[in-house]
Picture 1 (cartoon, protein in one colour):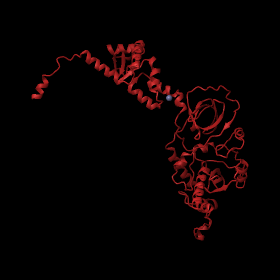
Picture 2 (spheres, protein in one colour):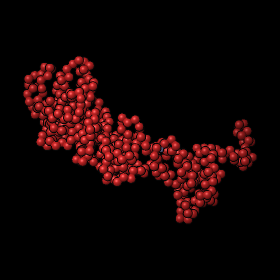
Picture 3 (cartoon, rainbow, N blue to C red):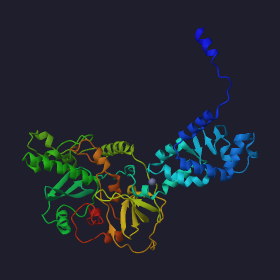
Picture 4 (cartoon, rainbow, N blue to C red):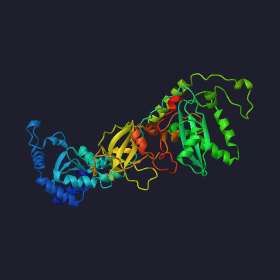
Length: 458
Ligand SMILES: [Zn+2]
C-alpha cells in the first residue's frame, strides 16, 4: 500500500534521544509534580544528604536483591514498591510522585495542609504528588496537631438517641419548659405518659420565684427536657395560629388534646383522663364514656424504638472522656466567635455530660457532642481539683430529632435531643449549688435546676 510504504521508509534512523529530547522528557516528569522549583531544588539536595534515599537510588540504578533481608539499612520500606521507583535528576520518584527526604517532610506537610483541608482532602492531595513511607499516619498526626483546624472545627455528629424511661401512669413524669412569644412569657408543663400539656402565662416580670410559684400550682419541680421542648413547640404553634386567626387558644388546646396521636390510637385526653373530653365538635355521649387505654406504654415503646432507629442512622457514638483529657469546646450557637476553645476535662457529670475547665479558669458544663478530643497542649496548670471560679450552663440548640420530625402538630413527642436528655439531671448537689446564680433572663440554659425532690411522692 502506498501509505504503508511511505511510512515504512520514514522510520527514525536511530532510537537514541537527542539532548533536547531528553531534556523535554525530564522537564515533563518534573513539571507534572505539583512542587515548586525551589522545593524541588531542596528535595534534590536533601535526597543527596539522605542516607536511606541514597541507598534506594543505588538499588534503583543497580537492581534490587531478591531477598528483603539483604537490603541496605533504611531501604526496606521501599522494597514492596520497588517496581514503581525511578530515579531522575537527583530525585527519586514513585510513579509520578516525588519521594520526599526526611528533612523536607515538615515543609511539605505544611504546604499540603496550607488550605487547612480535612484529613481526606489533605491525603488526596498528598497522594497525587508526593510520597514517603508512613505518609498517611504522618499527615494524620500532623493534622491532629493543627491548632487552626482545632480552633475552627465543624460540628461533630450527633450521638445515638438515649430514650427516656417510659412512665407507667399519668403525671408520673413531667417535663417543664419556659418560653416567650410576642413579649409574653409562658410556662409549659407536659405529662410524659399522656402528652397532655398545660400552658400558663407568667407575670410580666419573670423571675425564678414567679416561675416556681406558678409551677407549685401544678406540681413540684419537674425537670426539663426534649419532651417539654416539643410541647413548647406545639404550644407556640397553637398560640401563633390562634392569635393570627383571632381564635380562642384554650379552645384550640382542647381540640389538640382530643386529637388522637399518630401510632397510639388515643388522644392525650384519653390517656390522661381515660376518656375524651367535651369539645365544640358534636360528640356522641357514648364516646365520652371512660375507657381505660390499654397498651399505651407498649405502643409508645414501639414508637420510641422506631424513632431511635431512624434517628441513629446519622449518628455516631463518641468515646467517653477521662479527667485531664484536653478537648476543644464547640462555640455556643449564639456566640460571635466560631472558635473552639481549649479546655481540660475535670469530671464527667452525666452519661454524656462533662465539666471542663477553659484556659481562663472558667468551668463549663458541656455535652460530649460539643467536646472534640485534641492533641493540643493546655496552658492552664492549675490544680485539677481546685474550686471552679464559675459554672456556666450549656446553651441548648435546636434538637436534631425535633427538627427532623415532620409533623409538629403531632401529639406524639417521644423523640428528643439525646443531649438534652443526658443533661436533664444535675445529680451532683455541689454543682446544683453552683448553678444557683443571681436571677438572669429566664432561658432554658441558665435557670437554676432543682433535684426532683418531691417527684417520688407523686
Ligand atoms: Zn489545619
